[in-house]
Length: 109
Length: 115
Image (tube, rainbow over the protein chains, first blue to last red):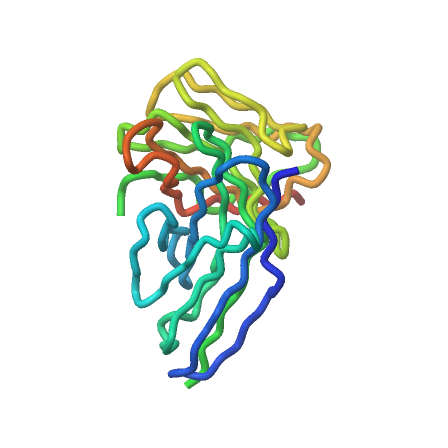
């Protein structure tokens, strides 16, 4: 079955510390993977997608097909990174996107 | 903000009543989606539509119905058959082809409370 697992409901780090939000997936084909973010009082929006291989707001994510993971990383967390982060998977050619349960990141001053 | 709008922001319903949530987009996207967001469960897909006059059930379609008579609009009706309708409902849209396809654009959401 297709599934996206985010094992941490809450992650709390100090400002300037590295942060890694974990995401593992279960999918039989070649998925497209995404990270979406929801800041306080804002709508859910795309942060990055693996196919773009880009860094957004200092965040990167590497697709590891062997470990079926797509962890989100940032070397130095900022207070404005505090938000809810969702990992998502989309089947190529299809239109269904499956979301993980989300991880709330709290960056402390 | 624009793009994709949902109304109303808050909605209260008595048990046994049907209620319709509005979703409109001006992004010229072919695909539209409805999700339900519950604490600790992420987003779960209710229905999606790839083209006008066509839609498919998602993972939790029971107790819900949709229509897609216009490209811009994808209203969701929460019927009295939905056992636990109190939730936050999100509408989204996306292109169906091109480099940006599969990236979803979300509305601000509607919080439905059943009294």
